[in-house]
Length: 199
Image 1 (cartoon, rainbow, N blue to C red):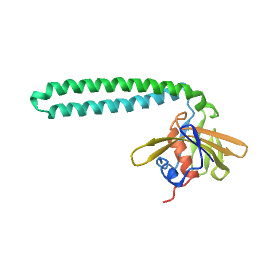
Image 2 (image 1 turned 120 degrees about the vertical axis):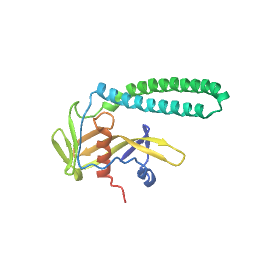
Image 3 (image 1 turned 30 degrees about the vertical axis):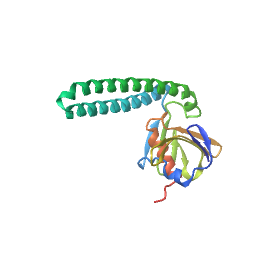
Image 4 (image 1 turned 60 degrees about the horizontal axis):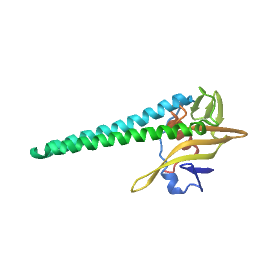
């Protein structure tokens, strides 16, 4: 199995890395549809925008709370500083959103490469992986490549599955978490069925 982390080839996943691959909830059946590039872009930017709005809103609430807790004679100065900080954060998040949108659009042809046709239904269930009505039983599938994105904290690095390339006899099946409706659940459940996590 070939492993890419942040688009860079790695050796085999270590047991520790594999234990830190983010698990989605296990579903008996997950169904999604291959999205068009425009639909995938809308979904990705919508999720990113929502995340940034939550971050900005949380910061505004926190700074207003600090203003209310300050001594009355200091409140005006702290309020002005809080507004300045909130505006600076908002501008920074707008910059980040535009940068992410540019990176996403640059990588879109690469992400769409090898996927089933737009509108194809993909189902993960007990008998196997179903692509446009054709069932590939789990024992007949092998993971050729996994693309991961790593997010580090002080304690550990969590890996999210971005893309899977599966071999099924002479066929290659490509699944991308952001190019398929319910894509995170689909690639996550395929991974869980093919790489069961030890209890």
